[in-house]
Length: 81
Image 1: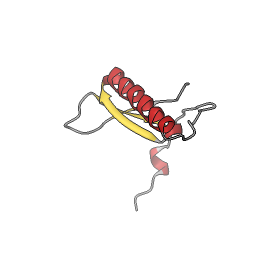
Image 2: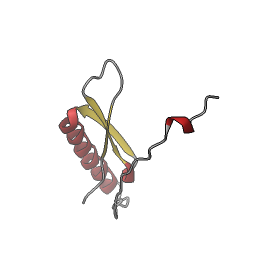
Image 3: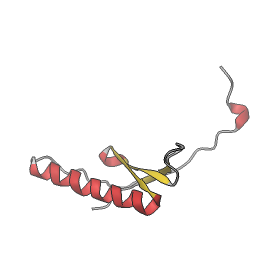
């Protein structure tokens, strides 16, 4: 099985070097220190989640295809309220 993981730095003073790891197709999020730590945490979370689904007889979500993109918003397009 393959799942898309989106990594995003945590912007908090007490978490320098930490990243969120989002698994959109499973609606899960975890975090870890550095990119490797976040990916390891995501792998552990996915394995645990799938094990839990299997043990309760639920269907395992299978990601067909994942895409990640960004949208650039120019500063002048954002108006103050």
